[in-house]
Image (cartoon, rainbow, N blue to C red; front, side):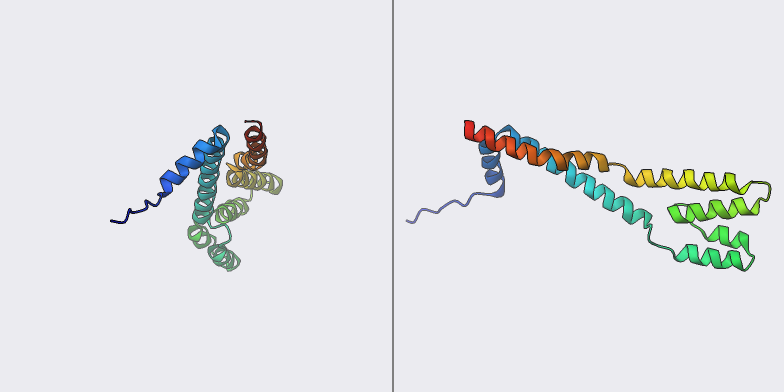
Length: 146
């Protein structure tokens, strides 16, 4: 009877790698899980907002130029940053008593708020990207000492 050679499963290989690598590999594994999660969150966020989509904005501007501001405002989806800024500017231009400088400041405030929302979670990704090579080097030195 021929003895069957047992092929190691992925989990067994991962367990062996974690045992050999020690605590530094555990930390790097945790960093990689966090980094992949952040990347997936950012992809999902950008896909939902679709900031590159300008079709409704172009249609709204065309309606605005044709002197139909109510239809232009109703066409815009406020969930998208560009549409939100366009609707805010159209509403501000419709109200003649609002100074244009105040409208410009409000548009800048809302735009910077939306940009900061898109930048969220990028700082932890930067920290992980800068700490991971140092941890790898530390693990190598620690392994050589042991």
